[in-house]
Amino acid sequence: MKLIIDARLSEPPSEISVFRDITLYSKVFLKYDVLLECEQEMRDIYWYWLKKRGAFDFISDIIRHNEEHGLTIRQSHGNITLTYLRVEHLREIINRLKRG
Image (cartoon, helix red, strand yellow):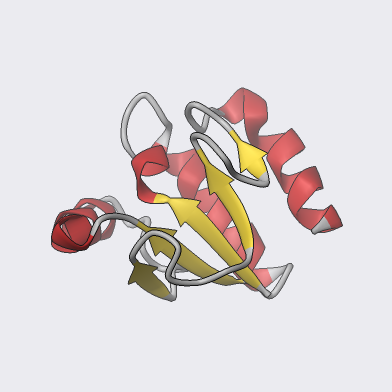
């Protein structure tokens, strides 16, 4: 199954450690194919941003909006909708990912 995360959720005020925890848990324990979703011209910027912070390890690919289908975490119109990723949301996000 694919998990598609809006790349904007890796930016502040989101916590990069929470972003990494979500991708790690999804990839290792839930066996999701983790995809990062952004505009084509932003791919390199997000790759460098996440790589420099050690948060790209569990991401399989960077895709354009609506290029793939699956479970989504987005700022709007997602299966899981959040403004930002913070530690106080982590338990709820993991529980929702477990339910698929």
